[in-house]
Image (tube, rainbow, N blue to C red):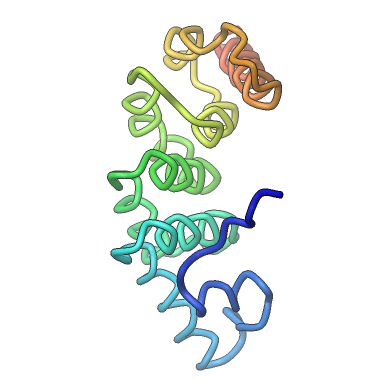
Length: 158
């Protein structure tokens, strides 16, 4: 059986388990600031989980965007992909150049394909086509196809 992937941080584990509030009180505000700070943690698992958790929230503040923008240049491709996805959920045009750069590389992850489907910009089509061949992972293949369809639809309306 495969071990569950968790962050090293007990704080992040508590956030994941909904044992720590991030909304509605002074303590929650402090916890939210700590979550943002964890996006720059030295431990990769902590950065990964902190960016994922931040990306999935609906908050759209300067602090959140700054944290996601910073994480979009993380050394780890999964962290970068999660950050770009979080930005795409908030501001498609802000995410577009980051997504263009990421998809121009030799590899990409599912977060980038999901972000491309949200951004749905015709400039992504050629780079997405590079990932259109079957990968052996049906979920990834479906996300690439969804992103291509979204970008093609956007192209047709321009």
